[in-house]
Length: 159
Image (spheres, rainbow, N blue to C red):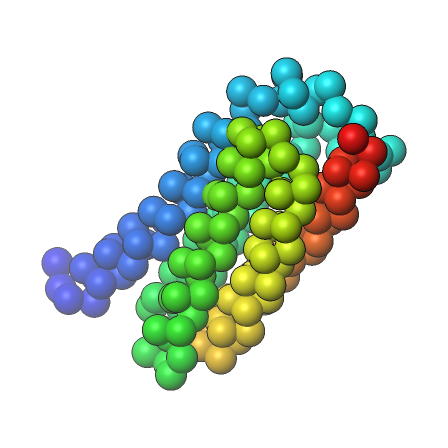
């Protein structure tokens, strides 16, 4: 294999690893608490059915990984900063599940998701400087995280 193919393969693996890790870690905290603690919470009328969350997050994680791959493949100025922003936001993404679900703490989850939103917006801005398509691929994530923050707030308020 030549160097560019090896670089591409390496970048695919680097792009997938943190996203996959965040998804797995998030599920470890979330799934056991859905039929127990989460099921007993008061939720707002706009709460989606539980089955919506899996496909939504899978789609978002695929978009994130592809966006991150595009940044990793780039040689544009700002690439290093974009990588750092991505690492921060994906770490906080996984943290939210542990605070909200495993910690059974909607107030703490709300604080974490507000931080996550700041980090997603920062990541999107950093990606924009490197690869505009990569930045646009994160727009649905901003939308979903904003919706999740509102849902988190309402669950905190109602409980």
